[in-house]
Image (cartoon, rainbow, N blue to C red; front, side, top):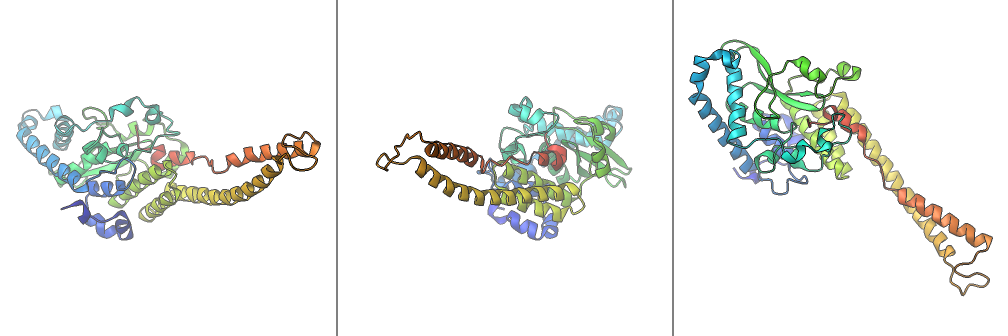
Length: 355
């Protein structure tokens, strides 16, 4: 299937239930990346073929090495689910070069634990095409790759969010996969595989606040609608970093429709809407001030031919005109320099999906 055969993001968001049933998490993530800076050469069909081939290789290697689990189950926590995740990550990391973007590992814009001002400008750091056909990913995209490939093999995998971080969970509460219930968290944003209990993510990568606890939105296994909402929020933050606020607002409106009970998305939608309204007001004031300044400057720069005054006249009236013109010019340069919504970074995905 060619990339043109897949729906546009506006189509998906107009009828999300229909497309969520048809499209897997990888396709939805890539559709949300389309049109963003860093995704100019995104070939959706090629990326999905990559996921399909990765799934085939993971299945082959898992079956090939299944005897290891039979011979030594305690080496894999006596869990067939863990064994499957172990080889899922091993094959993707070693054979398909799934890795954290090396340039971002020491980048303070990504590793500041307080997540005050992360850099969302390059979509390759946010969506899975940056791993498939780019320099690598972050914890905002690596778990999505694992889930997209694992679900192709029938693994019961869920995306899970904690403050400033995303990971995934094997969740088979009915024991449908191997005949008995299993649930455990999987950390794969670094090298190898790790399993941490929920308590670990209440303290890392950043301790929860009282508001985080009361919000009750972390450590929940996400539904497909919540997954798509998260992708839209990430898209919105990328657009915001490029001052495309109208498009950012559109993303948040879609996210709120998909996850109506998430207070963070509503707060951010209101924040960006207020920001746009403020910007429109400043624009009108800017134009008025610009016209006033033009008149003042014309008076301050009287040609020497005007009777009684020269261009550099030092009379009280001309000095006052020049002082006023200078002050207005300083004020004028401030218009349009609207500070970004920093608090948005701390609301969306607990600050950011990087870690």
